[in-house]
Length: 401
Image (cartoon, rainbow, N blue to C red; front, side):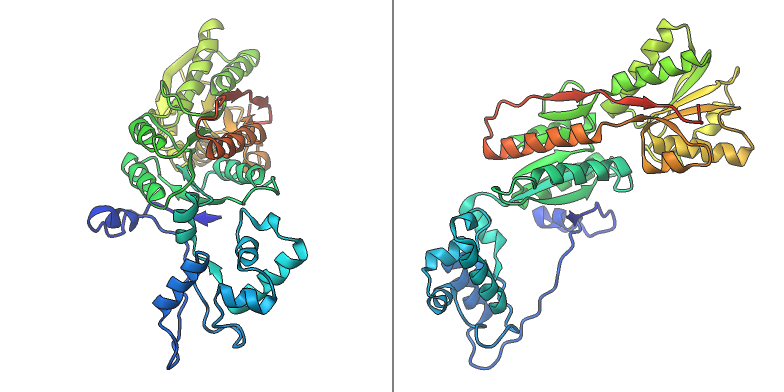
């Protein structure tokens, strides 16, 4: 899994090249040593690319095979050059007998061959990579969804494996724009956005003209993209119903960034039930600038300034809830005696707190499986008639409420 991040301190440069400076990928530095009389590295790479699109020759590899090109490798092994080409290909290797394929790959490995992915992408029109946008790499739910999506994508043994390129936006529209441009310039086969806000609609629509764009976790109001989402409105309604059943009359929401349709839907479902059950929201919502525990901490002062004070809080994710609980601890307030709290996502940490957190369990498996199916099918056939789906969460009641 390749991790990238938005680097606000990186140089911007000029033009497209400057934009890619802001995306940091893991990379290796291969150093080549050229002995007297050896062909130039550039010529060697060109020959390899002409043979198969394979380059990155390691000239420190075993002497016996260090200078073999594909044709010579085929002669040495007593097979056709086309057989070598198939054996070293991700999408045609299954056409070669397993024993022969393994023998060729071992010999190629000894010679230091590696696929030249750029040449292969240009030749086949596929890079077997998918760009993924997340707003916060520290968010456990995002990482679990990504991991599960790619478990499903790699479940088919008859298809080439797909490499994820992961980038963090920190909910900055300018970062999202630049990172999408980077993905497209790297010729990804699709983009999965787990970081969508209304501000990203236009750039995602532009990207969708070039590659499939799939939304997971976060929706965009009014925009039509293939999507695999949680029914956040239903989740918010579950929390309000729980508060009503526990007898709470004055409640409050701590909502994530206001441009996120995900948080808007959670708020809407909660408010609808409150209105129908004569529960007062005071104030109706407190907005956190980011969906993090640090932002959650900063909301407590506003909560305590309200009169009459609410007796229960719906935090729109577990991170916000944990921040509120931490701020309460510093103020000497108890949970749930002074304030009952419910979060959203059912993260690992929510289960092991001194006062375990009530939370809405996010349907990670269902969302991830459908997102993976959408990506796989849309890469194979851009005209695929997709079905966007909402998956219903469930409420887990613990000691905090």
